Length: 132
Figure 1: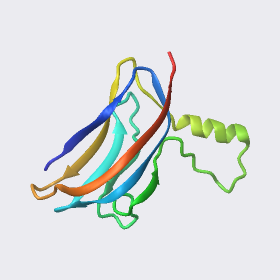
Figure 2: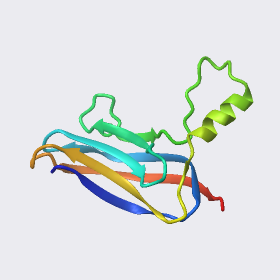
Figure 3: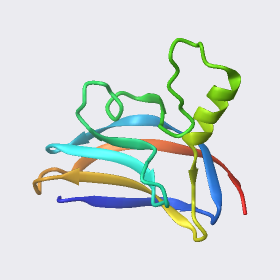
Figure 4: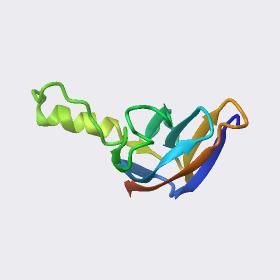
């Protein structure tokens, strides 16, 4: 498997994604070395979850439970930011879909034919509004 993209559904034109999270029901397992990332084929370069190894010890793809994403997550430095700084930081993490509908994608990358995802299940939740 050199790389596989799985379309999970479409977002409408002009959607502004304000939050995205997923509930990992069953951890992903592979037959080799695979990275997985979640994203939207948007006009922005950023995605929901950066490419991480499925076997990564952090458990992003291995340990069941609620998982956050890069959308709507603003790193804070000790809680000293003003409300305006926090609001601007959160807004900067939003993703806007262009004038055409875009696919939500799970992108799997491996280097060998045995590098397949064998098991795993999750539910992805996306919060958005339409801005024309």
